[in-house]
Length: 291
Image 1 (cartoon, helix red, strand yellow):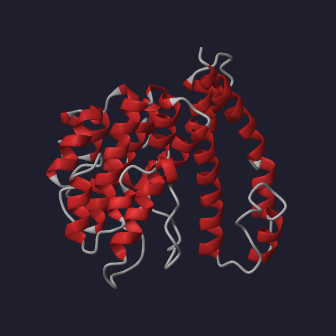
Image 2 (cartoon, helix red, strand yellow; image 1 turned 30 degrees about the vertical axis):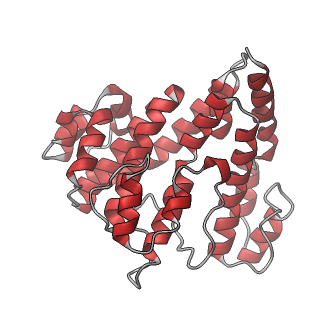
């Protein structure tokens, strides 16, 4: 046990007070108008960035940015291993930045490229400020064409997404993030594999999109070659490893994968609470706090 873990775990446990909890979430949901919801949030730990008069997109971004800020602060209290784990867990913020940057190159439909993207388009809102949680955003932000963005990804830890289309970039980055999470954060490997199964199943068997070969090969590292090569959803579900199959246990049809989405979040919250209750000083309570 090092002093870094003592400080890091102590800070992680203190962050529990920054959560709204079920009661707070119900309070927001019960608001009759957006302004009522913003006033409610202004009296909570989200008050720093949430302000009256915000649009839905601005309010959504402010709530997400508050989470990111706490993760950046938490990472600063960790030893190197803990900071790496938080960086892997926070990969979605860099993916979001890359997606919005790519869409800024053209006047194409600004809706999210796939269902894992934010539900509200953030328009011209500034990118998330990643700080030490970024991996390649500084280089990605300086690209000016889709091909340049793809090349920058290929030269980074994200790897080549196989194409420069918004769908290929979004999916490729999320597959890469799942692999990195499973490797860097063993306590989150089950989440990573199940989330990847959900992403792959939705893209292939709901959207009907053929993924670039490089993304399929990467997905096979967590899901297995039989699963990613399956010709039907039923065969795909049957071929999944145990680390991912649990998420789709009673999801008999691909169109019902939205049920697995809710199950995944419930599992992450439940597992996170268990990890946070770990009594020793190490990565588990930190991972639990982020979850």
